[in-house]
Length: 356
Image 1 (spheres, rainbow, N blue to C red):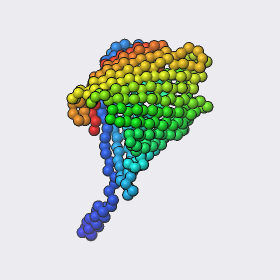
Image 2 (cartoon, rainbow, N blue to C red):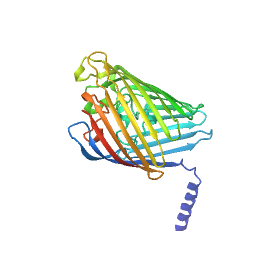
Image 3 (cartoon, helix red, strand yellow):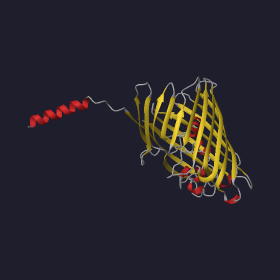
């Protein structure tokens, strides 16, 4: 009896060994943290604190199909919630481009990342965002063309999500790149959405909110030039127009706001060092009636130092001139740089990043 059982088990193992293998999965992620000194423009004053600036882990894979294309997937999350950052599946083909669906980095966010080269939570993208887009829409479809002689076109459609929001939107971007320069453009629009300027403490200044019959749109135009090896110079202009879901207390009769922003960036690599500098100007927000929303500025300088192929150390310093509590780089929080700004603020960050 024992011999027959052992024989049956061995036969089963042999059958399993002949089954097709699953598609390979890759474990990847980033560990990053910083020690910061500064103030958030509120009542805390200058102090020393630690920040985890986005440690996360993910799994991704690709499975080659018979027609030459690949099925691709990605599940990426912060350490506490499965799929909190990205969770999508798609197809990619060198001839036809890439399609994916699920929760993924938006087209608008991808373009912003091309310009923001800073590592810490004081990134210029965070200040430039100003409530105009979602970084990781929950329900979306995305398509990117193959490289067409230097031109790549991307687009996404963001469906309504009954659990999180009742608005929908779309974005279309184009990038044309050559050896010495790259040109960028993007347009995005949300329907049944507005800007909530009445409750900045809850972070609603930082993303659209559901608002029936209202809409908001923005577009960006930019360029990067590479005049010499290892030098990048870039500039980006953004225009936004937002119907208001809730007006600010100082201008209760306002129903719409327009605002322009400008971002400038420079970076140079020399051996293990990569120094960079950036500047953001948010011009005054103009309402359809009543007083304006004050302008704001951010200046940031810093450098990376590559320790190994996958790890680096950095130091960055940022200053914000934020008058009249205008919501510049506003998001929910009670400490550190992520807290809601109520005035001028500054910070120096010392951080480590490990990619795996």
